[in-house]
Image (tube, rainbow, N blue to C red; front, side, top):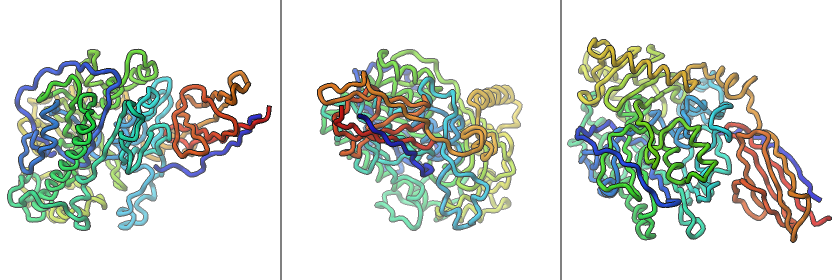
Length: 572
């Protein structure tokens, strides 16, 4: 006899300054990878391409430079958002944050700094999880892409930041913790391992944080022209470089682990940052200083020392990994790839070249804003939908950066022409920059007749992107939650019902096969046994021994998980 008890999980889930390469880049060649390669992501935080391999020699970065020498360095890689959580939601789902409701910076975790300043800061801001609407993601809906790797036999690990704007289903990672590592897999099992390094995060410049070893000389660091040249500005920039030097050492140790395990020949290594530099007018801004990121990929079939000017967006990362890890026989992955808007940039199969990279910036903590951008790698168009806002608005958390005080004390009459964005109280509705001749994006060419045709073409592309992706950021946030994410009343739905049956209804050799389905096809199904805390991904009938208790969980992203406990008795 089989007994079960149902209950819902009740708690509401909460979850570079750019350096251009002017040299002509080599033509990209398709990558021929071995069967079931390993894949490692090395993710830095809040860092522009301020690295030796990108031409910035302010501090030495020998380990990252060696990685670049062994693989391919991309000069036109962009985050979809200049702030971490929205950008990471795109990386993990392969969907635009504006399409799944994750574009506002923190949907379920209000900023403590903002509330300390103003207890009513979030009075009109709803608390919710990003919830991909029906119709996205193909027959399985939108899921975190490592789940598909797990279904294909990969060991998936994440050390350890998630920050995706929704609670992560238990089906995504074999291990997501401070100890997660590819070494914990079964012998010979292919792996996808993510390592997040936070030393370069903007908080690394806070006065309250212990600084790393001093490497950069404040008197010698480069000062972008939009900053005032003050001792505090120099000190914060120098400390940012010190953090990059510390990051390089951490990356070196991880690469040594792969080398000592003799895994380099079978492993693709991606090094990138989650968005641009964490200093004011970098992070949270759609200029290249906030969105252009370093990207290095090394691995089987990639020629050493390559430099590519191919356009790459964060929307391309998930399909690229799935393409590397899959074969035409992997029907689940192929169906997912077909439903993703990104372009696999290391795929065997030919893909059309990306013409545009799109970006968005919306509410930052408790401060509402709305901007959209498009770039072809050289020209950048920015549309400011709330021009009454300044470029640098008061985000309480960011004001812990010491140099913020210097920027706030600047006055228009004392500013240079290059510093207009820092002192302006309003934004122009349209900004347009030539980042080849103006890499710091301080000369707005929006009114120049010579660029009128190009601006019109880029405006059309940007508006078509917003329409085709059903940009939810254009809707008031409360209305978005009520009508698009959790219709019809804005209350978080559950993940549907689990249906459990037995194959043939008979026990065989002391075991019984459970067949499990979820009423919502977008819900992932996980299971674990009583003696283990580890959750597994359900993909086929589950053979369960007598006396077992099995926990089963259905979880659709952004919905409340539904859980069932099944007991297998010895009764006939």
